Length: 141
Length: 141
DNA sequence: CTATATGCAAATAGTTTGCCTGTTA
DNA sequence: TAACAGGCAAACTATTTGCATATAG
Image 1 (cartoon, rainbow over the protein chains, first blue to last red):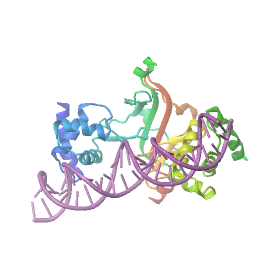
Image 2: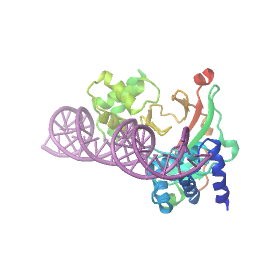
Image 3: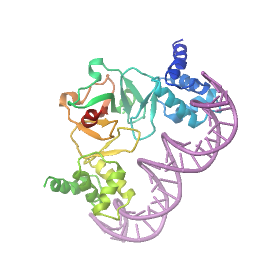
Image 4: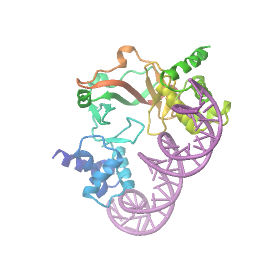
């Protein structure tokens, strides 16, 4: 149900940016909402092919771009490897596990979200990511 | 003088990691200390060629790797483009200007440096980068 | 003399682009 | 029917690798 609401938003959101709603964009968005993790474009591609076997990698990039432009998905850049995409639009931090490579959302009290900058700097986006061991991997040593 | 001290450290630091001191590694380190900015490997390569015309790109990567391994340089990953290298080993944040692309060090009171994580997470590195307009570009609108 | 580092060129990974066809408003 | 989107393959950028030669311990 919640996904349905989101999917209906999609058309308006795209239109607001002069972008057209297409089957591929809707499908990619649906795929992004299905698992609340931080897939790479490659992973989105593989998941998207399950319901739409002919979709191409270039289209996945195009769709993800469109979703980023209309504010439904965020790009996350936690390491030197592939860009990841995050459907959680709440302002939050990321924790990347050095052992399993997984990326976790860290919810943070609003007061802490926007650290002060020296005067003159005008921040628009805070990208805070922490690396280390996630609870699972820390337990397993 | 300050650089000289650093350069002398280099041999021991490398040895401590089982790495050999070479002319190239010393030269790349010297280049890193000359301008306290956040060059990409490509930029380090171009600067390094001035004093050592035959150095190769692969060697620049090797040298930067060696410097990272022995804790004299840090990798900085502020966008989806090339990795940057930072000779400032003090714990600090980064500010990346969306207009000019420049990366600035932001010194932060120690209390703020290591935000708390939910229990179970064991952080080893905090990578905090903020994007927006730097003082110069903000002034120029 | 043996292990490690360099230089070069080729390989790779992630992403973007060009071109032609299909689809949307 | 004009502008935009999709599919495919080729191009591109940043980085890594393999291999022959050079150098450090």
